[in-house]
Image (cartoon, rainbow, N blue to C red; front, top):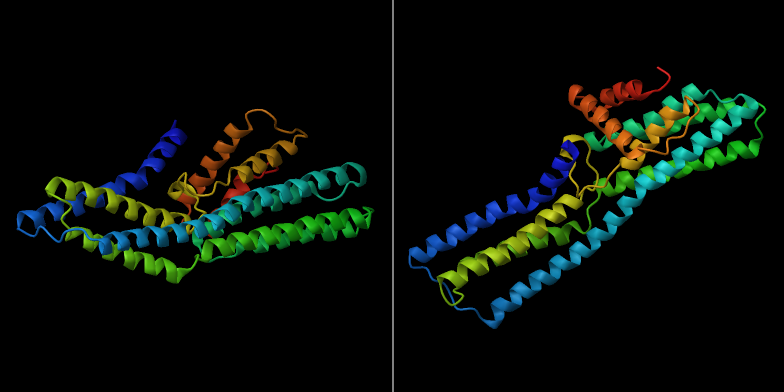
Length: 303
């Protein structure tokens, strides 16, 4: 129920808060009208300014959405690489009794928890260190009877994890055409001022026009700001942010593999439970790095 409520409220939050700002703007326009400031009549120039604003906003939205689509692929690639390492290592252990699966499970879970810590902190890079820690498992395999080509496959998956992680860092930090976004903010501000002093054939028509156009432009600005940082964790995450549920499902599979099982039923529900545990730890421990350590210990099936 809490998840459903969060989804519903998260979807309505942007529109509801934008409507509050729009109501203020409509009130200001009504106040100006009451003071006798009816404004100028609409012209082809004012219509062109509004049309140009729509074009520029659409341009930046299209570019930002392409980055957002790249962001959606990153958790899938990370989960795929982690799955491959886990299953390959389990197969090797069944034949050659190497590597140490307990240590490997903890290191794989640490990749998930430290990624969340980096997203929460915004500047840390602890997940990079967690991915590099997987090399300890590969060094253990180098000293065993496992054929070298098997180990090479694992190192290739590790390289794929690095690539996906760097994509997450880059998308989380970089903005699509920052100058264009600044221009949009200025353009929208000028359009709103123009609407305040334009008479659209009467008070009612003017208020409706101000309300509709201001909601359109302000909602798009807020949406751009929302998706410019596509990853969020914890209670701050909304349905507009890229979901990390596949990584939570991977944690479920890691926990099940300790008992020699593979989860095929209710995996989504169990992933939700993992999410709740992670959120609880993140709220209890203020430092994201320490929160990741506590979460790794809590989720580790061998503890």
